[in-house]
Each structure stands twice: as structure tokens, then as C-alpha cells.
Image (cartoon, rainbow, N blue to C red; front, side, top):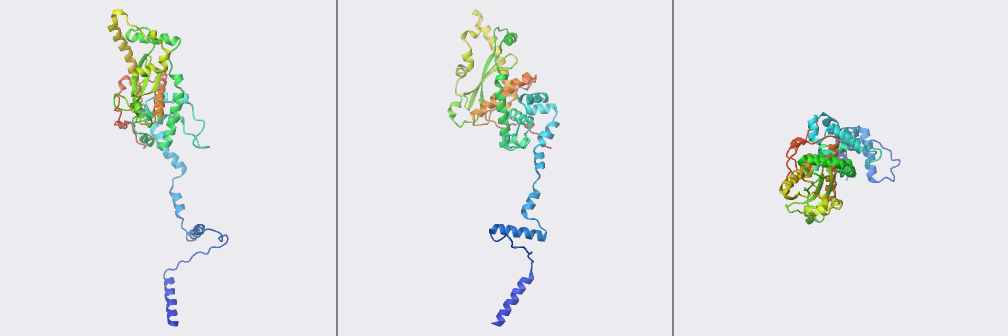
Length: 366
């Protein structure tokens, strides 16, 4: 028995003497009522102090970029890339001139505060507007648009929605029928187009393609085989929109859209010009030439804001507001003498297309 006990003591001593680590002395004050996890954290902290190593959490914090570095990274495209663009590149990407952008910022006004967090510096209105113009001027997916501006999709949507709402609130200011002396100048401008007298505006209607709506999709399925809503516009001879009626389901005929519009209630039957007797065919040709002004206005609108070729959203309300905002921007540009050249009018995109094959909109962040 004594030999066996002696052998166990020798074996036990050999095991402990082979790799011996001295545990640092720690006080047991205040540890009586601590839970096991707190005790483990306490001993790990004391051990790390004794042997000079940081804990994994400290090392992780050290690896994370500082808040200033993170903000700087998110501003590279806005603060560095965009200012380096030539005037032509800027106009191609954002569909307006730099001077027009500055005027738009003045019209919309700077943000008074940050709705997403108290005390934080609000994102400049200019950056919000650039993001919205870039989105409206391309057919890129919204994910790519947000990535281009180095934002999360949720933040980018908040900015776009804020700008869209402010623009739609300005609709009555920038889109209105001529009154008083403006009526006479408008009539004279149309007379110079094809010689037709008494024309106050040219009416046109088009479909705005959208995704299959979440509610009542059959109402928005048109005879051409895709989902859409109507955009009925009235314009003057200079492509300025004087009335816009957006949102009627695509399944309706354009005559039904006109009959249900607020404009129809303002017009009397004798407001439309009558053909002068036996010159009906000649007169109809003149009317056709005059009405072409409205089609031209829609073409310019869609060429500048290519998003209208297909609004990739299931929310009809959001698509309607976006379309109205594009119309307001169209008139705003004309008021600021920023015209979209006729040679830049492009063919309407395939309604099923959501990506822009022309990648000139994308620029690197370096």
C-alpha cells in the first residue's frame, strides 16, 4: 500500500512539473454573488493583464475602422468622384447641368434636421437630389444605384422618397394651365407650328410600364400585354407640361382616361376647334402636326428620365408619385433654360428591361 501511494505521488508530481503555468493571484473580494459568466470574464481579464495579451474583444475593436474613416468612405463618390466629372459626364449621369442642380437645391431648400437621428449632421440636400436624379435618369436596378452612392438600400430609398415627396408638393407651382396674358402667347406659339388658331394645349397619353401590382393587378394589365398605368399630359408649343393626370389603370382606353380626368370637367364642347367646311382633310393634317408637339414633349421627358420606360416597383402609389416628380423636374429644367437636345431623344426601352446595357452611368470610386 505504501509503495502504491508513493508511486501515485511521483506520477502526480511529474505531470505538474512538465508544463507548469503560474496562475496570477486575484482577490476574491466582491465575487461571492457573481454569476459564473462574470467570474470567467473577471479571471480572463486578470489573466490578460498579467501575461500582457489583449482579449479577443479588444483586438476586434482595434481592427474596426473609426467612425470618421467610415463616414469618409461613404462620401468618396459624392465628395471626390462627382466633382472630378467633366460637364458632359455630369449631365450624362444626372441629366441636368451643374447650374441647374444648384438652382434646384435652392428651390427645394436645405434639410433643417436629420429625421433618422437626433444630433447627427443631416445629409446635404444636394447629395439627396443627385441620388434621385441618377435613379430617374437610368434604368439600373436600385441596388446598383445605392451601391454607386455607397449607401444601404434602406437609406437610399429614404432619400429618394423624401425628394419625390417634396417635388410632388410643387406640382401645382410648376405644372399649370396658362391664364391671362400667358394664354395669348400660348395660342400664338401654336399658331406658328402649323397655322391652327385657338389652340391652348396639345393632349397626349402614354403608358408607364410597372411591375405586376400587389393589389388588383388585372386592372393594370393593358392590351399590349404588360402592366401599366396611364400618363395623360397637356403641353404648350415649347414642350412645357401644363397639365398632368397620372395613375389611371392600363386596362382603360385613353378616351376613358380623358373623360375621367379633371381636365374634362374644365373643358366645354365648343372649346375644341372645328374643321372649316370642305377643308376637313387639310385641317386634320394641320391638327396632326400640332398634336405632334405633345408627343415630342413626352419623348423628351422619357429621354431625360429613362426610369419612366419601366418603373420597377409593385407599389402603384410610389410609381405614380415618381412619375409626377419627373414631370415637375421636366418643367423645372425648362424654367431654368436647361433643355434636353432633340438629338438626345432615345427609343423607349423594353418594358421588361430593368438593367441599363449602357454602363456609361457607372463610374469608379477611385
